[in-house]
Image: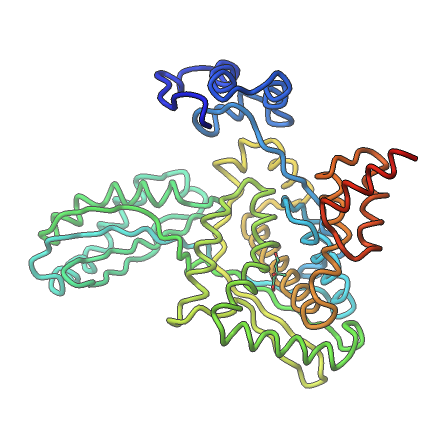
Amino acid sequence: MAHGTSRIAGFYQLSPRERLAKVAEIAGLDDTGVAHFTNMGNIGPETADSMIENVIGTLNIPLGIATNLIIDGEEQLVPMATEESSVVAAVCNAARQCRESGGFVTDASAPVMIAQVQLVEVPNPEFARLKLLEAREEIRRICDATDPVLLKHGGGFRDLEVRVLDDMLIVHLLVDVRDAMGANAVNSMAEAVAPSLAEWSGGKSRLRILSNLADRRLVRARATWRLDQIGGKEVRDGMLSAYRFADLDPYRAATHNKGIMNGVSAVVLATGNDTRAVEAGAHAFAARTGRYRSLTHWEMDSEGNLTGTLELPMPVGLIGGATRAHPTARYCLEILGVTQAERLARIIVAVGLAQNFAAMKALATTGIQKGHMALHAKNIALMAGAQGDEVAIIADLLVQKGSVRVDIAESELAKLRQH
Ligand code: MEV
């Protein structure tokens, strides 16, 4: 953006169209570019403008459906929003291979979120810690009074923890947030109760915010892949060795867990939930022993089958935020058929486990590139300018040649058009 100033007074007060006109003028965007941004797809300017600030357009991400999943005995279709090829196919493949053994079994703790209140300049923190713990019922009263609706739905303040960190006191409010993601509910409680905590402790309150390490809101999924379904002992042993590598080495664990989050974040995004909150929680949880490790665990059962488990903090909701505001998210929830946040959380964790199975299997056998090639080749064909039927023709040619490169796609496209 080397064309003009970034200081645009009153920009936020303009409509999306007016903002776009300004940006187009400053950045030298042509009419085609302006027309592109003006089409706001299936959100529309009003919804987009009410969701974030300074809106000029929207960004479409492909939405695919993962098939073949059985979760807790129920057949389940799962919408996934992702820009990455192979992610949806991976879940379908993994889920197909464990259907014979019953699919995924899941479980969840209560949906308890943590809000933190930082107290500083506390003269005698250990003494103050006990005073605060004694005030549990008064704290409960203040917290619950901030959210009568949550209380009506069976949620609310559950417990209190107080930690001494150097000269600071850190208060954790544990709050059952039911079907909400819970950030708003617990942040409001932390702000409401902070002045009393400061007074009782003799210190001052500073930060009042939820923790994304939502380790009181854990969701688990497990599944068994029979030896005959996955291709025999060698595949299983290769996968177990891949898992050991990830669990022992943070360099590998980061990639291994990224693959899990390919599945997790795609469902979180499709349902309008907060991908960053879930990701931050997952990675912090992966490092909870002091070393960053694999989020999944893989073992062999007494019959030699491969078993996998995944346990993750899963702060997702069905009410509030984009989940309600974004029409696509609402329809995705309809496809999922979920009426409780807990079921959504369980589905997401099952998808994460499926994703990890597929990635490990590919890596331990043919390698990841083979599976990536077909879809990747389509992307490259599009990048080279292929349109309509040309896309599949060029993509096939690239795969046949075993070299999926834009320059080759461009020259093949030129040849195709000459004919
Ligand atoms: C690619 O997005 C994800 C993988 O790298 C995950 C993994 O290595 O396990 C394939």
